[in-house]
Length: 133
Image (cartoon, rainbow, N blue to C red; front, side, top):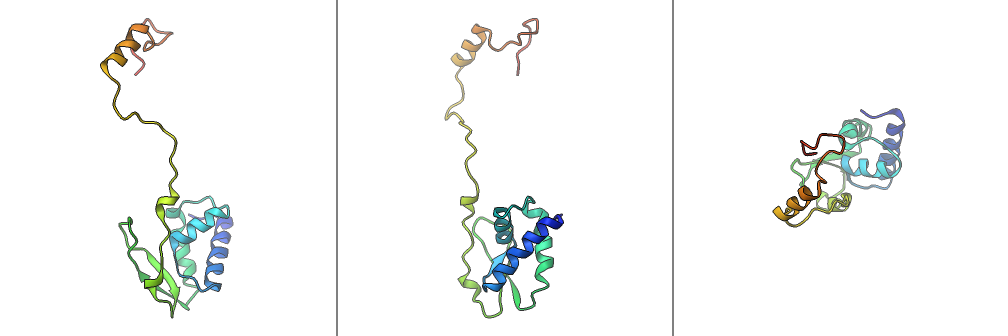
């Protein structure tokens, strides 16, 4: 559910796109609103976006295909817009690596033996009878 403050941001983004005659999806609106400080996730605001779009009868809806998306999103566009001209945002750019280094190979038995032999696997406050994992 969208907060009143976030709904204002959503309305501003939608109005800007409508005034510029742009085609867009609810996801496009969500991503732009996030850049403007909205804190909600897409799944929390998409229905609000769809509800707001009822206020724009000069915009039509079309179901489109977007690569990498399993459901067909609704494209909102001016009546005279060719929906084939819409270029969806590159969703690969939305996800940044999180910086976790995962080894290409699992630890070897020697790695486990070294930890065991050094006692690093034991809980310091315990009686040395159980591993930490």
